[in-house]
Image (cartoon, helix red, strand yellow):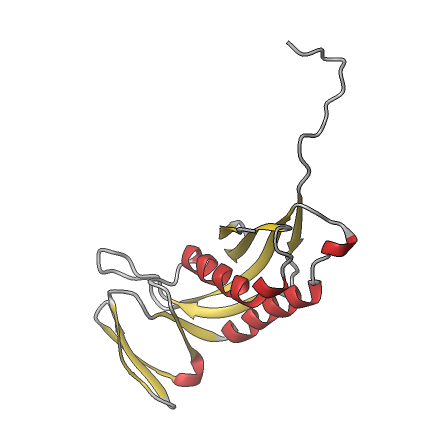
Length: 176
């Protein structure tokens, strides 16, 4: 039994950096599709995104490139802002045509024709907050990976909120 008067000692020290600023947001439209063949109606959200990085060191030599992190998040928001998000890999979605002018597709048997510049085709199987967090985590890792200090950044967690109090995260454990 330990002596309660003995001070506690730290076994390990880790840190978490969070980049969750109000400016990292985008408005877009989507339809979540369900396995029973139903879907939500086309509707929009005001999404907000953020990034958490778990670190083993905050030493001067291991400083993170905050400008690159901010640019990455801003770029994601710019790409998705005021667009209709479509899941390319959904089994209940058929993309009939994509050309310079239009995207024609069916979702759960309903036909849609949209201006090409208004659509983002995502390599995911559903446009849900969970799938967005997963996809955006991969996108952030692909963009920032070379700039992250290997062995210092141990995890990346992408945060996506579709409304206040409702969202999802995707955590990627990174190998040294």
